[in-house]
Length: 321
Image (cartoon, rainbow, N blue to C red; front, side, top):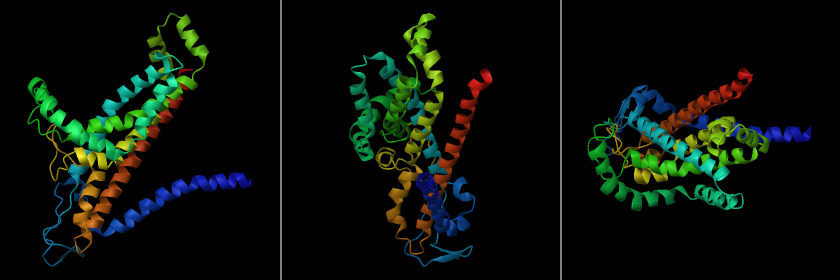
């Protein structure tokens, strides 16, 4: 019983930490929530106001003249970059997991898997530096102009090619960062959670190795794939430094195509904190806390939706039976 109570206490620490963080953000950002209202998430227009003027009172709150806080462009940039990263990373991760599970000899599998796992250990700032030095010049000078030239008739792929900073660059860098999470988790499921009998039965029925993976093993691990995608989504939503270094740090406008500079909520908090601290009323910092609160709520909603998918994915075999 003592062991059970101890483990229950340890498990509750995680949930308590989340509640404490959300509660702190809510209390600290409450003056900003009262001031900004629903326009905070439906309007563009982040403006600290006149830092050299005397504060004025609006809705009972002290703010600088001209101050206005709207983060629609941050929400759009965060969701689009995350969706684009998942769109790129999930097929690559699934293909890499299938290759590591069945496409190479068992003696080489641990070494190849080690290099994939090592990719996940690289700090995000290193990815950002690599993106700044290598990816941005390459995409801006060679890839984006060709995409505009050849694929410009497709919506969201036409228009100015930009300089290499932007939505697509952020999505590519994020995809490279989250691919190891999907690959390693799914590979372990394909290798260790499926018995040799399943493989032999599929082969005995005439299935090729690819057909065995695609029609038998992979559907049996869909819960693992959804779970790893949840982790990848959380990583992409909260990524800061790498996105800050390659996104272009756009302010107050929505992306018109894949090459447009953007900002995400996490990177924006870091980039604007210095300026926000110069606001003598403190409303700018509290509005940044409200940005963090919105990001937490988005993460909770995304994870809740993923949990629903997991629930129905787990019930499907029972219904089929």
